[in-house]
Image (cartoon, rainbow, N blue to C red; front, side, top):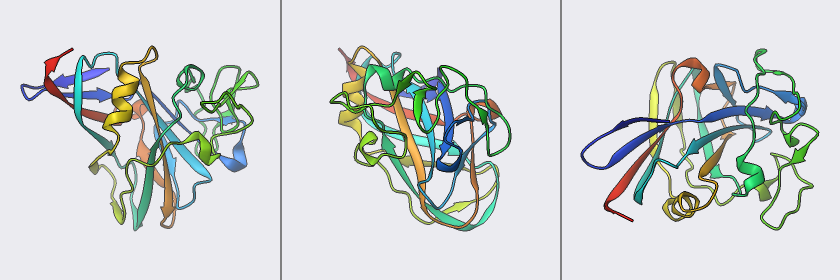
Length: 214
């Protein structure tokens, strides 16, 4: 959803869907949670998708912005990486799990760590290989941001550039104009919560377009 535009061709997109999955709760769904969970370990991955169908011009710059949902004393190092872009992967359903940090058992169609759609369609690679889950590194393209030493304070908004203009341009021109980012921690201590779109403070993708339309 587009939430604002300005004269400089900057467009702010609100997350279309978001959720998180964790390795020790592989069949749980957390799509209706007011937060996305991050830790100092990649065993938990949060996912955020943005619909690019409203972007009509060539993209010049991309930034990610999100709100910190709680406070943690120790800063965190994060990784942000785009998911392999296939029609199957882009059609994941965030689901209705909302039971604390554990989630609840997924139903058919809801994304989990193991399945894109629970017991239906698995996550897949570009070559069609489907014997993987969210924690498989081959599901994620080269990281586009690695914010380090990020201080974590409740209600604070953070913004940083994403180094993936070429990738997002390719997705914008494809038949399935949905980009999904995986976000996980590399170091820190504790449970770091990002506000999800269910909290009324959805993650945002800030896109600066070139002036000339195609």
